[in-house]
Length: 355
Image (cartoon, rainbow, N blue to C red):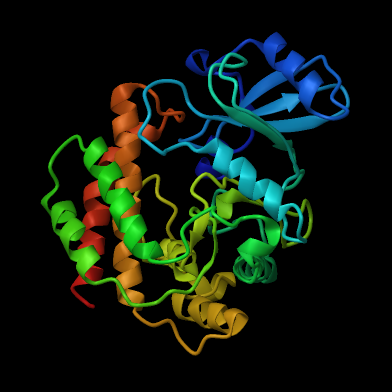
């Protein structure tokens, strides 16, 4: 795999940072009691990627696992819900949807200091560079189609049939998300951004009247997927921290963000690339493909969903800014998030003016 700067920065593991370390013997004893067929000794590494829930590779002589935990420190209410993440992974594991096997959830903070869960380590490739520089033109096309086919599969699953009744309210998803992220944004605000205040007022008054329902991933993007070691297809979807039940367009238009995002250092964007030459669908082609896979004629109110998506991204990055200030951000690069918030707010407002 070609190691671009972003691929090198986020791929693989590193030694566990001191503020995220814990007692390996306590964890090993817990796994011995709660994870079938576990056998130590245990070696622990920290994955490089991710800025929210710290993620670790657990290595034994015969098997590898992944551990996801709440970060230590004072956290935003309802954030870092690894118990919800575990629940949706376990539920989807009952279907043929590509998901790691969930082994066990630990709510006892005495084990490693915060709640965590352990899941299967899926062997494959995680691509951090949207341009897929080491893939052929046809492989890029197939990977992008596989991402979309996988999302369409998720949106066809009936939540009640896999035990996800009550996982989220069944109505007014966008309104609830706007309310939630407005609260999170205000709680994590470090400076006044007038456009965010405008959007916090505009969005609730302009929500489309649509009540479609599906399982929502909440952060559906390329680097949250494991691709087959050699074939251009998705074999596992990761990072379900923001999952809930809601409107499927919330996930899809968020997934469209790379076509919408400006070309900024540290941001995954397709802006400025010759997509047809590379075999990557244009935004229009990707939307058409999604409509085909989900049996839609068109995406109604697309400009609203784009405004909502960019505003939500601004709120998410503001949360990272706050965690940097508080010293609880998992990634060393999280400090860069502060420059993104205002730019995303500007983009969101542009889309809002087109509604």
